[in-house]
Length: 322
Image: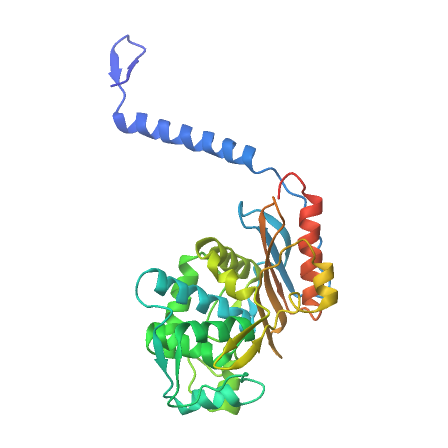
């Protein structure tokens, strides 16, 4: 036990609690210096003027590489399917389900969603048919199939309301402070109500929202905890029940964008569009021998070109840090 001498010369004992506190503080200070030494400052990349919200980060250190209106919540459309993907992977990883689980389609309104333009997709979720979880997952992430995403949410939680609650709870756990979710797919509740006549969670005016920082945080958690997600998001096409489903991420399949992105090894992640959200994109890339970068661009009509510019700029301006 430590001791101290008073002015009168008598020995006073220092409590173990005080000693422990001093040691803990010292360790924290040392750790902070060590972390700072390992993660040098980075030079930020300018955000595109056309975008309403932007955030890019080094996925390995968490350092900010580009930011614009980073903490303003905005509609994010189908990019919110990344939260659904995160929860699918979490359920399977925990042993609560399997890729081969069969999911029966029983909801006629979901069948209608799957075949109604512009909300449907290449594959109809016909009442009475069955799909594996893996098939629905590919439809959701490659083609951005809305009905498949909703069905996956029901597979996880049973009801749309329970799944929306789980999405919001998970967002809170991930530190996403400026996000809110009302459904698994990213459509506006007004679309549910007017065109599709499907019951919705919350108010008619509600829609899924994330801030650019939150969107990047979600992407970082997804590719860090479940890097296998990129095996799906980097696909340009996949066959589901005899139908060829094509990607909505044109960095992967448009020649001019592919040429511009050469060497970045872009592996997704997710596009999104509604009239309220505008054109959105959450991306991930990793140059050979460099750190992984995640990006989020919200409401930008030139989302793909601007994503590539941010990715390339982040590497070129920070050759020793990223």
